[in-house]
Image (tube, rainbow, N blue to C red; front, side, top):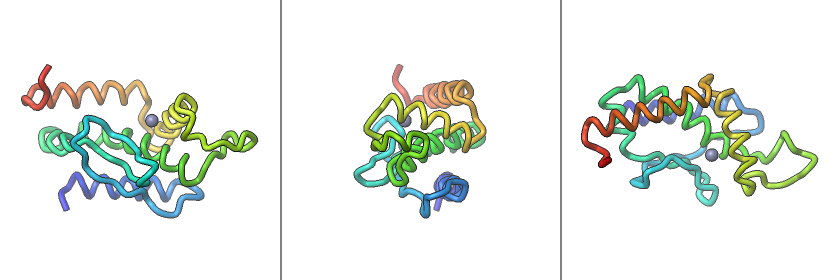
Length: 139
Ligand SMILES: [Zn+2]
């Protein structure tokens, strides 16, 4: 297993251990789609494969970016498998309400990773600029 893959698996394991009511970490895999997302149908987190290249170019930056991004997608996994704890009164599958599920995923991502959304946005820009500088992105 590559270093980046070990990091992703370990991070998801750690977030699982920090979360009540979730017994096992979500599956994850690489995708060629330009995004990081959670698939409820497969119960799986997908990560764009260029992050592997970013890791080779700047492991510390990529690690920090992934730490937050994984926490965010992990939050969607929790919303899906455990359901809602915040709005128990309402009893709705929160993942079906994008605005609310995004809001809650951002809050949980910061709680799990210790990284604010402001920093996460800056990290994302840095990762994109790193890839662009090395010819991976066409402006
Ligand atoms: Zn989200």
